[in-house]
Image 1 (cartoon, rainbow, N blue to C red):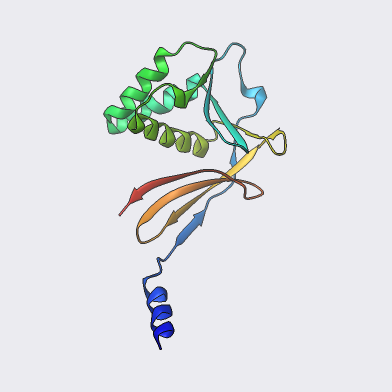
Image 2: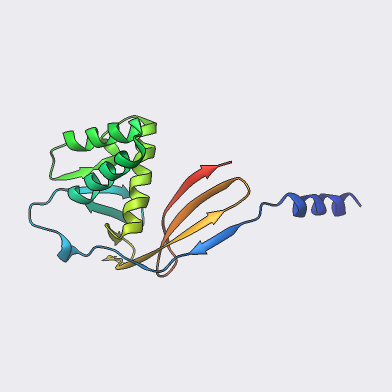
Length: 161
């Protein structure tokens, strides 16, 4: 009887998950880069490196600031603008966890818009297409970005309730 009640309780309080998969997103390829264009390495894992151009990243930041006027986004933009290296590791520009968290939202935005080069280290090639899935549970909603083969590139939590 104890086990039955325990299992019943778990089934009742188990969070419900809603998931919506979107159409494939065509990402940048190496031909879309211009000579002498500054590159920002947005993130690097054992499996993937995600890169974008200075123009795409700065425009995305400015558009977000114009719409939402968040100070941490302004700090992120200032940090990005100060760095003059040809190739920039974006997450190393600040020690602030809040500003780094804003960079994660820029990564998600740029992946959704198809403004990134996504290098698959395991396959040693660029991923031409990615997809995003929106998910929602009773407590959290967010997005997961995957390759066509469903390898997870990046996850972000958009809200906690």
